[in-house]
Length: 98
Image 1 (spheres, one colour):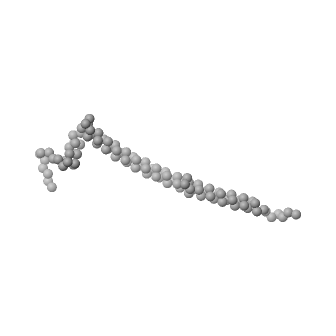
Image 2 (image 1 turned 180 degrees about the vertical axis):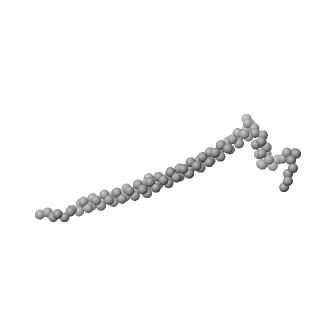
């Protein structure tokens, strides 16, 4: 005669299934490719895009100033400003007050 007591097999099956579900849920949220990591990567990418835009604008300004000092395009105002600030030159008709 068989007993009506449930076997040990279904308990092991459900315990294993629960453990695997818990592991995969944890990995999906906090793992290397989880949701939290995805948010961190998106925030870092946004920050790097802003830095790239700022650096690109600085490069554009520097390229413009360099082009304006080239032989093909000479901006006399820029040349005068650079001569004054870098070399400390003055015109003959100017007075310096310190």
